[in-house]
Image 1 (spheres, rainbow, N blue to C red):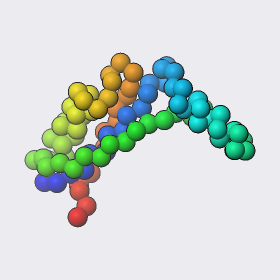
Image 2: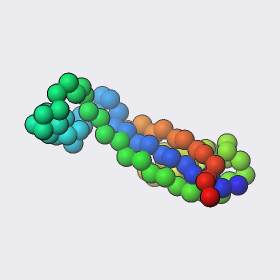
Image 3: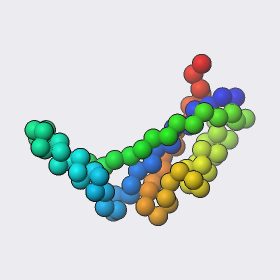
Length: 85
């Protein structure tokens, strides 16, 4: 069956994120007040074929942990949905 895995990779909260800090400062400079902490994430979507949703989720989790994310500094969140035609 066809699935799309959405792999979201975020820097862990205890790791400094200078890019997010720069974004927060830029938002304030542009007049956006009342904003709190800014954290950034990247999202990778992968279309895949798998026997079922559980198999697709296992494969996507393995992709995230082995290739796409640095497990020392980043957390991975996986969402798997049937692919829309």
